[in-house]
Image 1 (tube, rainbow, N blue to C red):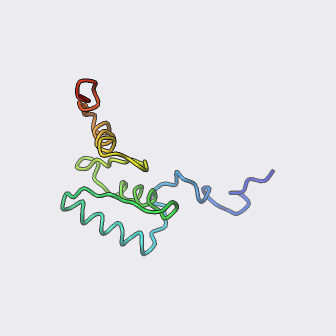
Image 2 (cartoon, one colour):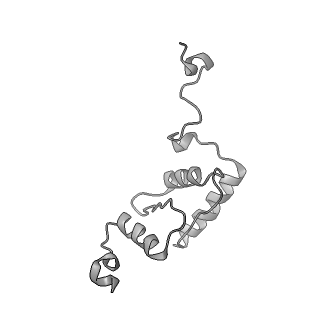
Image 3 (cartoon, one colour):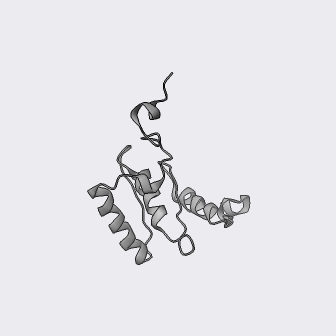
Length: 109
């Protein structure tokens, strides 16, 4: 069996989910979205990215994360549909290693 990368002369397998961000194609719409998001980052806004399946949300997030200074920023990523506000906040707090008191038994009352 011939290796497909070798057959086509590719140095890496194309169209994989773990493609390094520097190899992602920057379309006009991706550049515009990154510009808008970076504007929000500079202003310290909370940014939510929503869209239909397959439009490039994850690709956008991966490209964004590669551009952020890891010392100054932490990207929080929740991939859930139908989240309640408590589950949304809980997901963010868990990623920040913070304790979520309102999920404890006494807090429910």
